Image 1 (cartoon, each protein chain N blue to C red):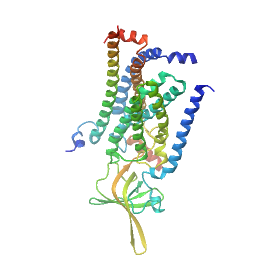
Image 2: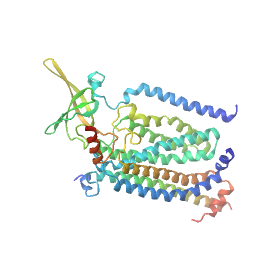
Image 3: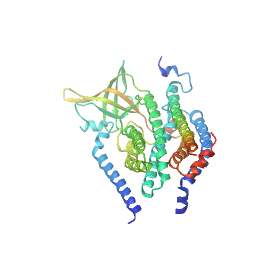
Image 4: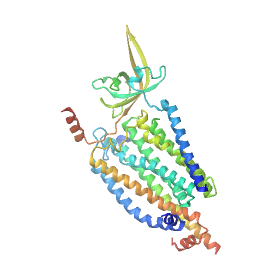
Length: 245
Length: 56
Length: 147
């Protein structure tokens, strides 16, 4: 088992795995996205209170969940990199940051656009919205800290510590609507939430599509990062020279 | 005429502006992420190619 | 002890330290993180006096009165309620029986011996719940709850 992990974590094998992953995630992502959009925008019925305005939920909730999930992956991969010094874990952590920031921006933007017609305000400083904004700042801080060092190992070390410190924000975001009075409503997934089966299916497909998008982007970005880090090794030379552009 | 009224001919009527704006902003963000990833990769491969051909 | 175990302990200490600090921080600042006070808080004197703050709750059914642009309604948390006055445009989702958060100040008016609190709102936001369903389902739920 340990041997297998070590083999997978060697830059060359990891690079090849990512290359193989990309097409396997691209087309499923596109199909899931199209089906998900159709289910969200056409099949799902209008809401009894919010009419068609609630349809923003099908983007807002998956991207908000992903924004937190990717942060957790980033911090855990960073921790694995710190403890076991696995270079490929550092790569996964580093390339996850801009993707996570992208999902956070989508969650914040769609939330604001949803808030205006329903609540009557684009933005309020309640605990849920504020903690999600802090998540975006954590991603940005991680990215700038990571790019501040020339040595990728030093960069990974310091930014991983930052990522682990920022982990505390995740339970705060999740429980904010429970612990404090917020303008933001409670959980959309779980006990409350979508009461209509078509709404649930639409949300589920959009969530799956988001996960595929994340893995797809990681598989592309990780390859770039491995090429840069391993540019002095022979296999990279063979790989790059062999590529026709 | 406000933006909301202007776009109310689209599906979802009075919410059309907000719903399509939300989906549009998300689409732009996803496409930007994707193009950025692809472009970075191509650039890296190109510059490494150059580097190797100079060293030879 | 190997170097790896050493690093493992360090990372473990980092994680537990951060979560301990977070827990203490949340405990200390919990009050400031409240977005609004409930009508009960106001009656119990927990809300700040002489300062603008927010009150949140449900709009009491049959309490809405419109006089031109001026609206008055009761906000309740099903225990206590408070009268709110507001001049301006209400959000789409504002309706009786629905959640609302208003910001403003409390005015204590006494007529004779009876004093009443009125909340003078400068902004009213609608708060919706996390239930989404088509109108038919909502009607069916309503019907079954009345049986």
